[in-house]
Image (cartoon, rainbow, N blue to C red):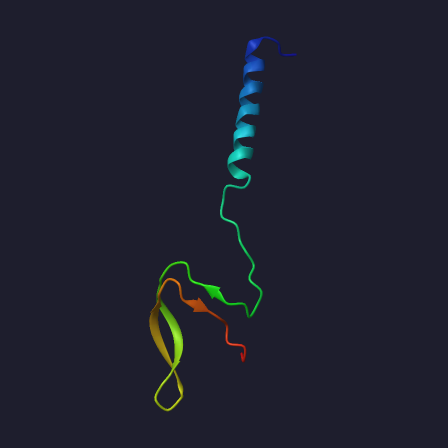
Length: 80
């Protein structure tokens, strides 16, 4: 059986580390918010080089690459 201050000091150190780990890992991170399908979202920052489909002069969809500026609204195509 152990006795003395060494055992008590180690026990306090383990307790302190456990409490600190619980505080730092318990909710200070990024959280995920689920958006229902079909709901619009507003862009918080500019998104660079986004691959999109755009209509050309004859109405055909052609691939393009654009920058979507901050503040724009994005919405999924309900037909697809």
